[in-house]
Length: 256
Image (cartoon, rainbow, N blue to C red; front, side, top):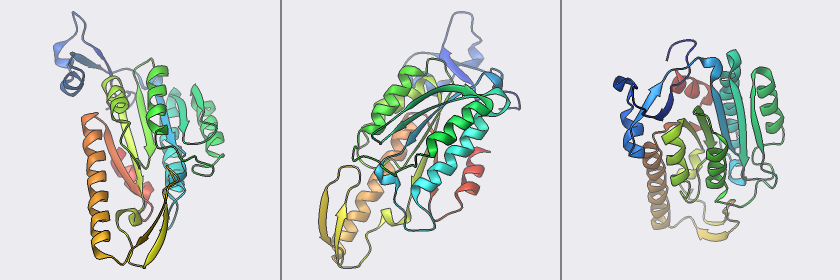
């Protein structure tokens, strides 16, 4: 995409459209021919869906997942509001989820920074369906084709698949997944009391059990592979950031 042009808009094919602009991926996902149109960047509307749930307030490396999420949100927000772009925000996972209408330029960016000041993961609730509901709300309010950016750790049930596919059929979709390295393996430290921040469930386990650690690692791999597979089906651009890496460099490489 060249300078002065947004990520192309998608809309159903109409009689007289240039067939060379047919988008095979969107057509396959929806079962209806779609064309991809380039429009001036100043018209781009970006909706950001930001997961502020309790699981984001976790980190065993240099920072919390919430720190990475906030930083990524600011980067995407800055890019989205340059040269007249408009930014809207939907948050989920707290007791005061909010929806901010799209605003242009500095006004849109300031609105984002104020929302972030509440703190990602600071008072998140144990609700593992919050993301799917937020995606559904976004699909209802994002009437104009544009860019939807989702920032989340994507933990818990993948009940957001249908909503993600619906967004990907109409909009350009960017999903930024935030991880922590300790989530992929159970440490061998004996008896542990574990709490699922999304559901609030408590569990006591013996982490010295090699079979338990192996099952945990296998389940985690299966979950991450399932997330990646579902996002591919939705036509999303999938970016993974980690708390133990230079997330800004990784994000910059993914977006260039």
